[in-house]
Length: 70
Image 1 (cartoon, rainbow, N blue to C red):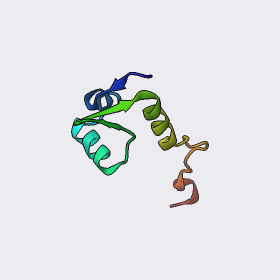
Image 2: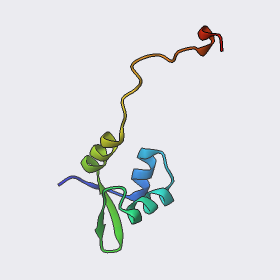
Image 3: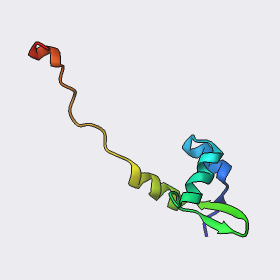
């Protein structure tokens, strides 16, 4: 079994406030486990969750509209 992480550890990893992590868990937005009164996170599940929300970067460059006389 993988080690379970605390809300503070997840907040640090994701670069958000701990209050955001608690809000996300309350909303069911982020995968988590409730152990008694404690909320814990499984790192492989968090990695998968982040990957599902990642988007690919743009493959082309922006067009400069000045070239069209605007």
